[in-house]
Length: 42
Image (cartoon, rainbow, N blue to C red):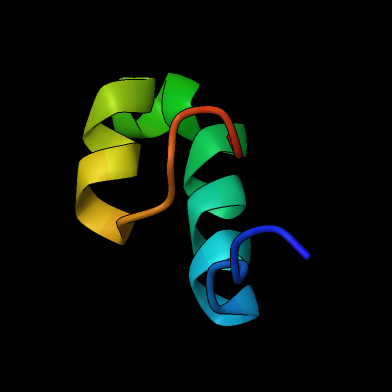
């Protein structure tokens, strides 16, 4: 049921970037666009 989830590798990359956003200066929107992981997943 429901949608097929994003590739686990993409989600892990996005979460790593999210955790490091203070040092890398990326916004949540930037991370979502780069990794194709939806904002709500982050």
